[in-house]
Length: 399
Ligand SMILES: Cc1cc2nc3c(=O)[nH]c(=O)nc-3n(C[C@H](O)[C@H](O)[C@H](O)COP(=O)(O)O)c2cc1C
Image (cartoon, rainbow, N blue to C red; front, side):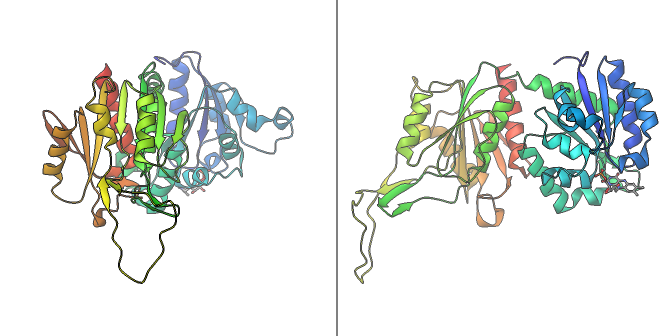
């Protein structure tokens, strides 16, 4: 989407002091040729009036879930069906919390829960409210649902405190919306696969060797690739993560199974190897459960195949852009450089998974990106944001 002409936009105005800016947002959207319908939450009505919103939007303003007239036509369903997308501005801390918990206790939240359209939220709140771990957790959850978040900006907020929490200006919101929708096609026609999660290597019918990988980083990258229009296959070992929207998930157990699926999807345009493939397996699998015998036992281990090595060092299978991950607990720079030399990947993302970093199974990651020309340390970020940052870089690579 290059412009907003003839777009139908549903704007939800929440109960924050920045609600006055949303009236200006309506004006700007209308100037661009959009048709804007407004829902005012009960708290939103305390900050701006229905009269102002309806005068500026030139449409009826919706406030009540239990309106017998509009609900004759299932108003709370149709409001989202009739829109191309939905903006929530200002999105208060309370609203984000209700959204993250799937509440549907007023017209705005019921409409969003029943929505099949892209949703963009524009947070605005006091910096302490923004930094509160509860708000940050709720934000991560809604991002995981595929909701776009615009801002907030840093600066002085209406309460007189400074910090992160200021609502973005209407022009910035409009640029963000256009950018969001142009993203959708940036990787159109590109085929991508992402390996994720741990693998497991059986010892006997009841035991196996595995590791602590949760799959969160790989699932987030697959989600982001799909959001940018890539045909994405996620090849995952055992993981409890939800299947991201628009992604073709293939579940595997062992490294060998993972390799076979990767081969069947190769050569791809983009190959991202985040899976923590188990490094060793038992030399000989025991068909029957190994019994205790009152003595110490030893497992005879052999090195497992390397999925990444088998693919990127083979010209027939190598993706056009190959990206590896290296989980390290020490000597990160040296070990990552060694892995980069051993595997013909374009980029290698090393992450520090030592115990004090809480990376495995956590929502945050610490990345150092290596390519042939050097390295770049990224600040500690949620895995979802790392995924988006990486995919933005992938888009730039292909442009
Ligand atoms: C004067 C005033 C200003 C407020 N400003 C904000 C704000 O900027 N951001 C916010 O998250 N909550 C703010 N609140 C609190 C919200 O209004 C309150 O949490 C409300 O329940 C949010 O309703 P909603 O979920 O419909 O947005 C403010 C409250 C008052 C009284």
